[in-house]
Amino acid sequence: MVGVKSIPSPAISADDRSHEVDHPSSEVAHFGANQPLPLDCGIDLSPFQIAYQTYGELNAERSNAVLICHALTGDQHVANVHPVTGKPGWWDTLVGPGRPLDPSRYFIICANVIGGCMGSTGPASINPATGKVWGLDFPVITIPDMVRAQAMLIDRLGIDTLFAVVGGSMGGMQVLQWTAAYPGRVFSALAIACSTRHSAQNIAFHELGRQAVMADPDWHNGRYTDHRIHPHRGLAVARMAAHITYLSDAALHRKFGRRMQDRELPTFSFDADFQVESYLRYQGSSFVERFDANSYLYLTRAMDYFDIAADHDGVLAKAFAGIQTRFCVVSFTSDWLFPTSESRALVHALNASSARVSFAEIETDRGHDAFLLDVPEFFDISRAFLQSAGKARGLTSKGD
Image (cartoon, rainbow, N blue to C red; front, side):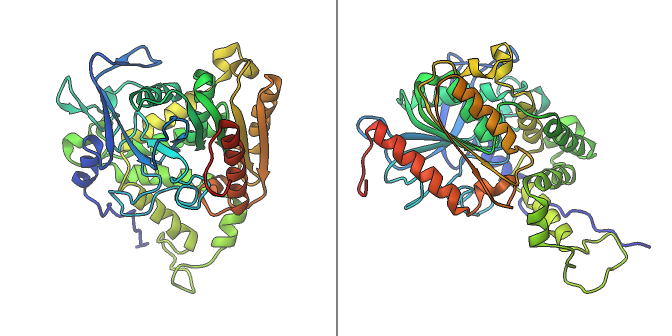
């Protein structure tokens, strides 16, 4: 018989993960029934909560606040140890002492998006009307919904204008939505590896991932928590498929090639003979330790629906008409998920609206995930843009 080894169950229990859903290891802003969140689907969500982390201090003028918007599988733990996995923050290459986003200079905020599973209200949260997990009863959310909730959080923190909004991928979509929806509240915007709308190819990849989750017999039409199980195999496969899109062929070849995993000859089975297979299985199994399957469905759908131009007669430049925000748009040559052509389309629209915009295409073979990795040119560009915007804003610090 041919040997087969499936993706293992997560090492972290569902109870450990679920504790962070409603009682996160971070700050939480609660919004009661008198402060509903109006959703694009026509539903007012209330009550709800937003989990967030802050780094640094808000200055007396309240002019140094930076909002970081996380990507699809990120969360608020941008520069601190993750409470579930124990791993470092997901963007500690960009955020930290001596980094482009230095907490000694900026008051940095990162919130878990609505629909997430690390403390902000989402499908894994308890529905107060029933006392049970929301599951698929949770309303479908959009990128504008996420930003609307973030704006309520920023109001709660007493901040009128953000010095900068920063994010990559789905986080970059939120950055662009912030500038379109609240142009007077964003002084500068750093949009990285993103687009103003999701492409048909990206929607197709997301549908593949959603179908993998829903095909898992443990999914139970989204009610898996009632059975005290989790569709970890389906979610792991979804993560594996998505992770391939975050890389490039050159990066995969450089890192793995066709090298075998702990062996010299094939096993003539369906075990992970190749290093790249073992790597993908690890990515899948480690992801399910910290992420909720239904949240994955909701957040991928939110990205699919995103289209800024659709709300402005199909003309992208109208979304940014008269905007005073300073923009820096960054793309990577090997990013085929959000290729440079989409960043150029954004830049052309910003130019047409007479916005202040700088653009950089960084040459690297690291693919879409380059914005999360150690890419010195990206750090230099980010630092220079933020320092320039800081001088225009009147922010000063030692070394300026």
